[in-house]
Image (cartoon, rainbow over all chains, first blue to last red; front, side, top):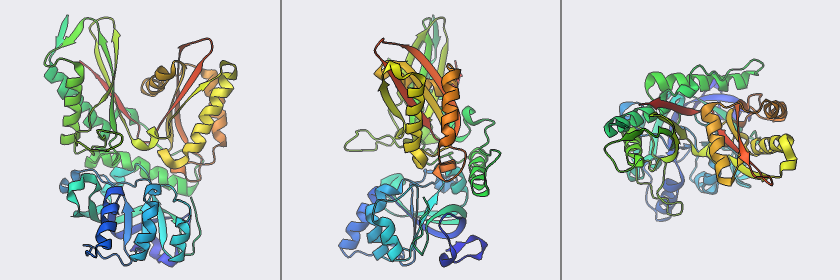
Amino acid sequence: MIFSGGMTEEMLNAGMVTRITGELITVRDQSLKKIVEMVKNGEPLPFETQNSYIFFAAPTPGYTENRASIGPTTSWRMGTFIPFLLDLGVKGFIGKGFLPEGIPEAIRRKKALYFQALGGAGAYYGSQMTAMEPIMFPELGPEAVFRIEVADFPLIISIDTRGAIFS
Amino acid sequence: MRIIDGDHIVEAVKNLFIKLNYEPDSLAGISFIESGMASDELELATVLNENMQKAKIERRPLCQDCGVAQVFLKMGKFATYSGASTIAHLINEGVSEAYSDGLLRKSTVADPFNRTNEGRNLPAFIHLEECDGDVFELTGMVKGGGSENVSALKMLSPAEGRVGVANFVFDTLKSAAGKGCPPYFIGIGVGGTFDNVSIIAKKALLERSAEDAELADIINESVKKLDYGILGFPGISAVKALYIKKQPTHIAMMPVAVALNCHSFRSGKFSL
């Protein structure tokens, strides 16, 4: 992942606004449940989880026309899945709002990161996507898992690698 | 009696709901930048302004949550329509076409418990008001889940007066914080009944009502004490606009409803 101003993950401080460029994987309530099942059954996932960045989001349908909007959904509901994803090596989480008790601590222990995206800036974030493809569960519609490439995606750092918190 | 072609109604509803998601009249001329913002809040405000521009120019929905469809219809006693047995059929047809042809996300589920998404964003939630003449005026609203979830209703005691109402509005905003995507457009309904007061709170938003300047002054003063700005982060811009509507009520009652709308305030209307 590339951060604005040539920063590295370790240099980010909670409370800062940053812009990221790189690959994100979108997940949400339904797809997360299915991913947990697959991992339990020993099935391989179609994306590299080590050092990956996960975006809690469900886009609009216009991606084949390059007209999609995408934005964060409330992270609270996804909180219970975060320790599972951390164990798979996920490095960063992007969502909206704060996390359930105990989850920030789990993120801190793994020196991972949590970012908040701007709620409702769907057209803006859509415009900063350079690629988007469904990679799992297309039958879930907006809740399918998408691999997306983003450029200069504005985010607020909410938990940094030292465990400092800004909410 | 004036008979309006049902196909025209379907077409106009479809066009309205597509427009609401890309360039609604309610956001025309709006800027989220305010004087006195610190640099981080200013950057977020700039992103929200660019969001409106990109929605219009690149034809991307303003928000990925394209909401539930709400309709407030004023129909004259000398106006009727062809093509369907009820007006709800025509409105639903138009809404369904808008969400499919307009590349909009369908977020309405058929049952609150089994959560099945039938993929048409139906039904539209319709409020019908009869009036004189042969007018047909349809106001549409697209309402996202985030800000609807932090809206609130309370039955106050009449003795609590304007200060009681203002305190309830403040408490609602304080607990909503960033969850409903501020800066908020706020519709406040006071009076009527338990069911009615939430409808007039929505109408306050749609009609930009200003029916009680004294209450508005108290609320505008109290919201300065909120400790958040754009999207719930530190800042000064928690509230974008405040609208108030009143109704007659019972001697023992003072219902209050606070309809919070996110920064993506999407409403507009047409007449046929």
